[in-house]
Each structure stands twice: as structure tokens, then as C-alpha cells.
Image (tube, rainbow, N blue to C red; front, side):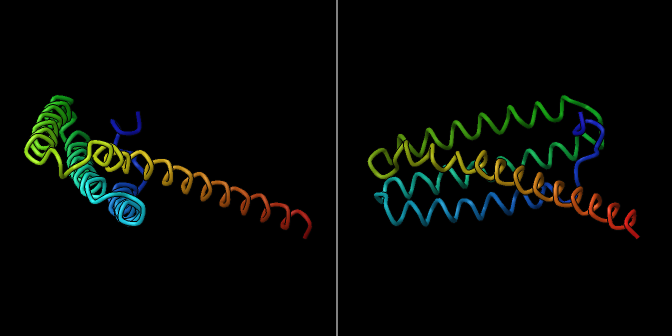
Amino acid sequence: MLMWSGKLEEGLGPRFIIGNWLMLLVFFAFGNLIGTPEITRGILLGGVVSNLNCMGILRDIKRLVRWRRQFVYFFGMLTRMLLIALVIGAVLVRFSGKVSVVGVFLGVSVIPVTFLVLLCQIQLLRRSSKAKKVLCKKLEENL
């Protein structure tokens, strides 16, 4: 419900996008170290496509908050899903031996991994701020 009212935490979107690109770099480096070149190319393809999709979703959410029309969000989502299917399908068919499907799935999984890391970070920050408030309150009571 927070998305519809526009009360998203300030800076959450840009942090998520930056985190996605950094996580893609980690996945890509890890794929280079232990994977085959096909898996590494697949990770790169899946990660770039999913990161661009995330940037489009963030843009649509801002439009949705501004215009309050769900049609804008769902039309953008449908368009992106069709483009993603076409791009990934075309690359897998055209370069069938050079790009791994497993690598594409690993690349696409950059987004949920980043989301979980960001959620953990937010929870830790909120807990530490609550702990600071409780500690300050106890100190004030003792004085």
C-alpha cells in the first residue's frame, strides 16, 4: 500500500539500482572464477536485462504515484516482459552454444538477491536506531 501513496523510503530506489549493478559485478566475477565462458556470458545477459527492467519498473512506479493510474504501470510491465522474452529468446536461439541458460537464470537472480540484502540492511538500520532511542531513554531516566 505504501507504493500507491508515494511514501517509499527516500533513496530506496537509487540504492536498489546501484545495489543491483554491484551484485551483478559480484556474480560476474564469481562466474569468471568458477564458471565457463558460456555461463559468464549468460550471467551478464540475464543481469543486464533484469537491471534494465528494474530501472523501468522504478520509472513506472514514479509515474504511478504521480498520475495515480494503474494502467501506466501494467502497460509498462507488459511491454517490458515482452521485450525481455524477445531479447533473451533471440540471444539464446542466435547464440545457442555461446550463452548458457543456467547463466541467464543466475543473472536474473541478481534482483532478488539484492532485494534480500537491502531488506536486511534496512532492518538492521531500523533496529539500531530503535536500540539507540531505548538506550538514550534509559540514560535520561538514570540522570
